[in-house]
Length: 394
Image (cartoon, one colour):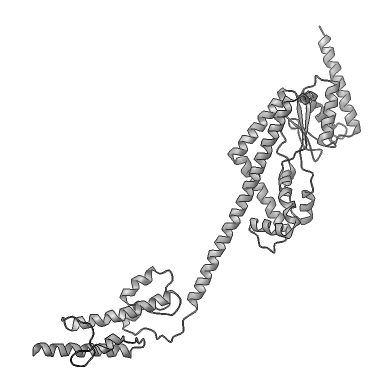
């Protein structure tokens, strides 16, 4: 008899807990199997252990916890706003986004969760869109950085290959009979302006090429030509700095300097174009891009060479630069001077031409003209007479 009364009491308490759950704002439809299953007294029975009231309460809380965890998962996906009990709080703390409601506050105050009819706020959707924008922004910036890095690497490779190819040709020239002329003229120019022109001319000739260049620089498609040119000039300048700082760049520069010393020992004077005279400077000036003075200066200028300058006041006694003639004309003048006096050394030719470019009356540098060209040939003959006179002295 006592066992039968205890069972009826447990069934009655379980039925009371089931009614409370049905009256709550968040109702959950009972399963057909649980609805058909009933106790001998006819009341619906929850799954409980013979422990009495504690077992029935634990069974009710377990059912409630399953319902709330499902809503919390939906809220974390942005579907509905839900609350969690003490079992769902740990899961919610691991989630990257926290819902507006505080489940701990509802659990501590004994309040019911929000009704399912409550409209979901737009905060989760906006957060995901903002996260997408933030994720795209670093990606675009990363692509721009990579594009510019690839551009600078290509420029460094271009300089290395250009210097290496030039050294091979100059080494072959030293082995050829042409070295007996005592001069070699180089029209090749490796400067920031020449490299910029290579990168600018072909892409800007077509809309597709312009788009590829803008994308490589990481600029908006509506960027004007002046801004694109300004960024390109800055990237090429940085690439030249990277070339001088890189291992391959330093090696090429050292090999080129060693080759120039070999030309000095062989008494062959290299004549190089000191500046790029191509159309890039005029194009950048038209676009309003400010340029540095060494923007057109060639990497091939060396103290053992004689270079064609851009302005008369360029150069010095150690780095001779003359104006008024191009590289081929200056090379022809030096070849004529050495035909008149084959005993002239490279150093003596550089000193003679440097003195010719100085105007004693005006005390300033000047360009080489027809008068200076004839004077240079006369100085070569006078120097030969002086050498012959010194040789005849006892």
